[in-house]
Length: 234
Image 1 (cartoon, rainbow, N blue to C red):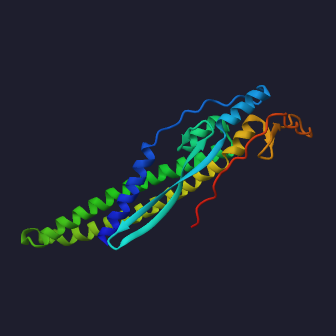
Image 2: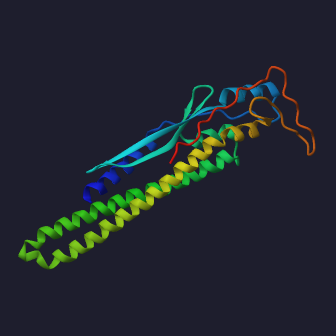
């Protein structure tokens, strides 16, 4: 049981560390909807999504593989940029866009996961220390009166820390799901922010007045369809 616990803790710590080490990608602010149509189309061609990337993490325990987790960890744009943090997409996607909302949810869930994970790890380490001290005093007659309370208190702390870490892992999973959603709705958010409408292969100006007909795609502005792989099977 101890080996499995520390395997889980090391996996969560590694995930949190990797998440924090990924570099941010500074994207420029998207041109306004009033900008000339060719400028907005060129912006879309440069910053549209090309591929959603996934990373698989394998956890090992005493008896082999204990878990496999696959999560979306990057979005490759047409200009070659690989965006890991969904909030980096907001300058192009726009404030209040579906990507912005999903990025905020992901950031909030990650923040909660960090607090719970590190608090749980601290509680588990402190609990294990108290249990060890109590066990040592159990064999020392002069300190035997404190041995049992130390061991019981340490056990409670260790158990509470483990539960807290598990709850934190749930928030981490929620953050990953929101991050994947932010990636998946980025194309929709980018088009909406640039005032572009279309069916995926052709685009045109969105109507500027209620009831107005959408502008027809301009000749020579044929777009390649955005290929985003489906989520991996559970």
